[in-house]
Amino acid sequence: MIELANRMSKLGTETAFEVLAKAKKLEAQGNDIIHLQIGEPDFDTPENIIDAGKLALDNGYTHYNPSAGYEELKEEIKKYSKNIRKHDFDTDQVIVTSGGKPIMFYTILALINPGDEVLYPNPGFPIYESMINFVGGVPVPLKLEEKLDYNFDINKLEKLITDKTKLIIINSPNNPCGSAIDRESMQKISELLEDKNITILADEIYSQFLYEGSHESISNYTKLKEKIIILDGFSKSYSMTGWRIGYGIFPASLVDPITKLVTNSNSCTASFTQIAAIEALKGSQESVKLMVEEFKSRRDLIVKGLNAIQNITCPTPSGAFYVFPNITKTGISSKEFADRLLNENGVATVAGESFGEEGKGYIRLSFANSKQNISEALNRIELFTKKL
Image (tube, rainbow, N blue to C red; front, side, top):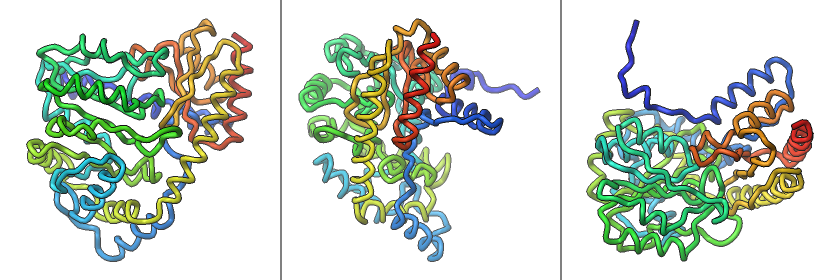
């Protein structure tokens, strides 16, 4: 019998993919399932990006490239980031990776020793907590409170910081809640962290998915410049989930060690994918604009519909493409709610506790689906709640 290393028992998972597998199995048995569980735009990759990828293959971009990525792509990332974040940096601070998750993995692996504390949003993207546990760190949940529009209390943040705090993860706009940190709050957070020896991982993968206001990045606060890691990528904004391409912008001191981790793990990011990503940034941004407009319309539809259902309350998210309704008044747990809703009424969602202990009593629904399907899902959810 093959024995796994002890650390493997500490790895969590991303429940949305487990729910997807269950939903697909039910579909294979002839059931009609509406998919509101997976965090993936339901739009195809724009044609100009696909064409650039095809041309790259024809032109021989099928070989190794530098571990940190092509210089031309890093130049385009620099222009893009400066435009949306007013954040200036050298191109050699950019490391291109196979999706956004490796930035979490490499950052936590490079920085966290056993016993080091990491503050992270809870409910939050489950891979944060999984990776902290994997390396022997201590996950310290930073509660996102419904009464604060699913943001954390900055005074409570200050009290959670100890001499063991090594890293804080900020995700805005947020998955699973769709919340975003406003300028005043980001300013306060930056002032709090200014004189502390704490690295900040700013997960900004949903930065283009904002329905009101503009994106606020902690990287705007230059006094924190040497402490901030920006995580971003192409999966969401350009519907490139399957292309597997993301990037991190690192303080200069972290570039070499993170690049070594890339070299030691997957050598480099696919060459033709990087050429397609260059086109994504250089080409027309109309597809992004149209997609965000459509998502805003869907958001309004699903929020209104959920709030019309007895015993469900749903705040309006300001970003990303998820809603996180409170279902505690239904009288059942969020896990039972999500499981039964899938099995009995054919709507796939994710239980709130999949995103951490503070997610109990909530479910996450992705509105990356057609309005017709969302409307039908709302009808099915209402029918389901009437049975409870």
